[in-house]
Image 1 (cartoon, rainbow, N blue to C red):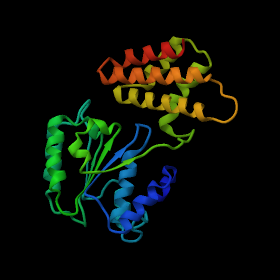
Image 2 (tube, rainbow, N blue to C red):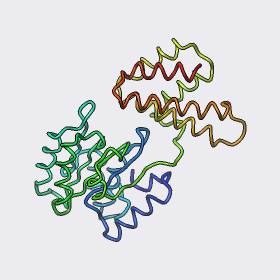
Image 3 (cartoon, rainbow, N blue to C red):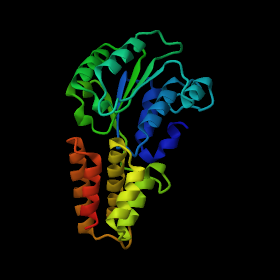
Length: 268
């Protein structure tokens, strides 16, 4: 893949490509979008666009650098992921040590997944790197809610919001939300939906992904042409219930309880 494969983001890709081609590459980017968006894939393809010498600004997907990034064996790429519910100071410390190393190629690239789950201590530690980055370093912070990042981090990054597009009906991340949504529309019994959900939603991350998917489906119904199988007041009510469940999860309510409570309200 290359940046050209993300045309669903409208003119955002063109803006990014033009900036890279003009040599305007920032040391840090925040890529914000819900869990249904492949933010890691977008970051990798932005890295291709920055590093590729065959097709700068998009990536050729054929050269050695593009192929290494595609197959996750690029020597100068460092990926940091959250541990359970947070991204701790130790993970950022290790990343900082790696970024001090001289890259084998042109630049060191860092991708920080779930950046909005960084502890306050981890954010303040990362801030030092953002203030004085090693030459050529590019850091991608992937976030579902950038408001959870301290303002001083936000102010030192270029923020791109990945959204406002239609997800394909065949997108794998929408399989479970669509199945549960259809079961609700079909009037399935609560225990049937609960049992299916228990098999498919294994942790809090899955639970947040389900909420993102359900909200996206409600929005699809809200803007669809022609007759809609759900009344508008039910759509608005459903979105409110989804957001209520999201607040419960953020408050560390047991995810199984939060989702079961959601299904009871939506199906009621």
